[in-house]
Image 1 (cartoon, rainbow, N blue to C red):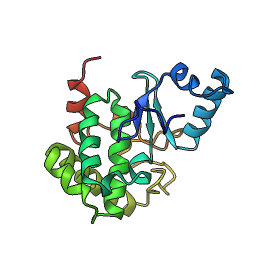
Image 2 (image 1 turned 90 degrees about the horizontal axis):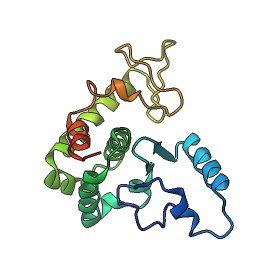
Image 3 (image 1 turned 90 degrees about the vertical axis):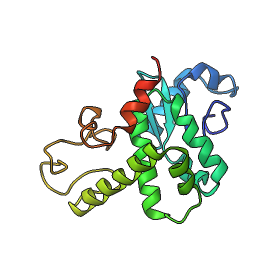
Image 4 (image 1 turned 45 degrees about the vertical axis):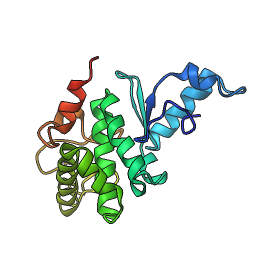
Length: 187
C-alpha cells in the first residue's frame, strides 16, 4: 500500500492518511492498517510523526537505489522542502549519512552537494557524528551505547522506542539544516 502510493516522494515520505490507503485494498480494515503500521514502526521499517501526519519508509532511498540515479537524487532533495516533520528529516539525514559512509562512490552524492549545499554539509557533519558515536561504542543501527548509562557521551539519553535520540536533544547535535527546512514550511 505505502510503497506504490503516488503520494510517496523519492525520499520515502508520504502523508499518514489511512483512508486513502485502504481504498486500494479490498480486504484491509482500519484495524489491519493500524496493526501493520505499528508492527512496521516497531521493527524500524517506518517512522511515523503523528503531529505532522507523515510516514517515512526508512530504507526507501537505499533499497530503491535513489542515490545511484542522479535525476532521482535531485527529485529526492527537492521533495524535502515539503516535509513538515523535524523528526522525519532527522531520521532521513541519519539514514543518508549511513548510506554515504557505506557507498561513497554513488553518483547521486554529487547531485546532493550541487542541489543543496546545506544538506550536503549537514550530511557530512552527521556522518562525522556517526563515526564519533561508533568510536564511543554505539551500535550504528540502534544508537545504543555499550556503557550502562546509555548516553552519547554528552549525557543525553537515546529514545528507547525508536532507537533515535529525542527530538529535544537534536538541535545542538545536528546541523541547522533541518531547523531551517522545517521552519520554512508553514504548519
